[in-house]
Length: 133
Image: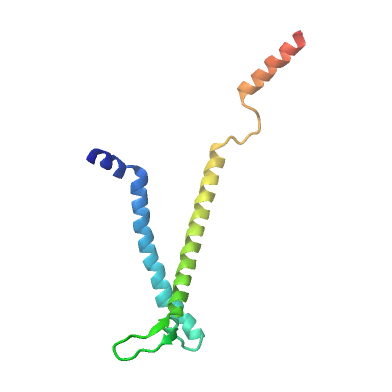
């Protein structure tokens, strides 16, 4: 069982997936910092100095030791902006990869539209056989 687990863990796909998850987590932190520390303060300034992370709808105010119950829609807005930036970045990366693969396939495919030599020979043989009958 240990041998099977080692073979599974050392497959290229599993290692690639692990690297992708680690890089994705780091990228998520970078995007969160971009949104929280750069974009949202600018949006808040444009909106008359409002800090969007503090926006909330209080359902029940705090009383004594009981904390308030509130809907934190400002944090939700920040999360949506995080998601949109990450989704757009992934879209651009996938688009770039597909363009790169398309260029590689064009380089590998033959440029001429001439049929392969075998096809030409087979057509000639077919034509010769037709004329003999």
